[in-house]
Length: 435
Image (cartoon, rainbow, N blue to C red; front, side, top):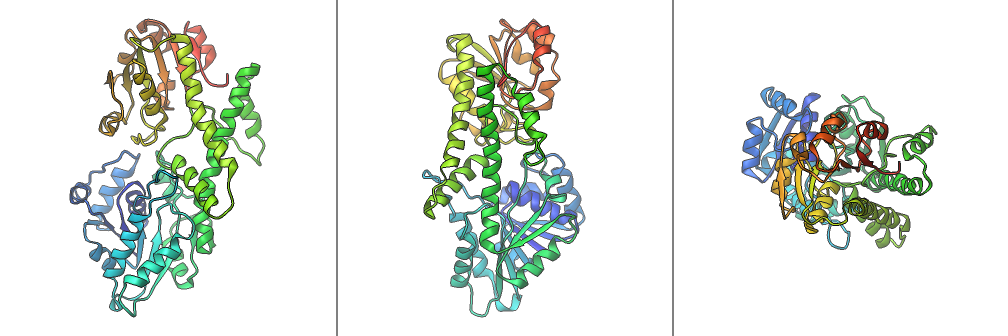
């Protein structure tokens, strides 16, 4: 199939690359000439395991192209994916201006001579967006143009997106146009995965409902962790016992600092707004949000209780990315925690295996903060170590070296990476979550 992806952000680039990897001819369109030049040179502007190698291979094979021309993309692609940002607005609703703009641009490039085209929403959008895309294309396209509109939500996890795309749990295709559905099913023939075909509204709702449920599991186990702390129970054992029930499962039952990133916070707010706009308020999700916000403050209070004041205290901060295996710091709980400590006068020595440069560019961290590539270097003379991101390397650290380098051997583990018994044996004062 000949596929066009408009938008080479996280979703667009990984989707386009993996479509090329299974044999499709893919044209990726982006309005940033510098980004397109970088990609044509085989360099990837984001860190995602395995992605850069696949981009280079498929560019070399001629299956993956990059351009700044929407017209070229529409001409080349039988199926045109829209994968542009859908940022949140202050009231929690989704800014769909990028979607509208691209739909308009596609419409103006369509001609009856090109033949039938399928236009696919790949971005996470509110229910009923597909109807708006169809209306926009009809309004701006020349007479006689034939097209169908599809919702094909992505379910990517940063840090393992390539595997998620090549070996998906499921593929959701929503459309009210049988011809468009046939094109989409042909695209996904090379992928071994269940395909769920729905109407377009159901497909759009699936993504928000799925992410909201996962966020609910995270907030649920964090609420349980607080009860464990109050009662002397161990949340790790409680989660294990809960997760052994096959109706529940163990995934997303890891107590910690709460969820962050570019998807969960935005999608929860959006689903709350969507439900309210439909006259069906979703109070449960508001509580999920509240628990998540409170979790960070609870952890900060634990640190404050031990240090008394942050002013003139040196903190070693391990983790800047919102999760492991990515350099993404958007809505990172680690960044928010650092902001609060810096705001109270702390001095921070921060490290992260991949996110140091993105954290610097992010520009949100103001105050006495330095960045280090060496884990142990951050510990020298520190009053406390704070573990804020669940990188596997942090769990393999030499605990005796922590004790040796720090001024006071205080360790606050916001991701429950270390074993409390090992920490005690190393003579560390160890504080985690729910244990």
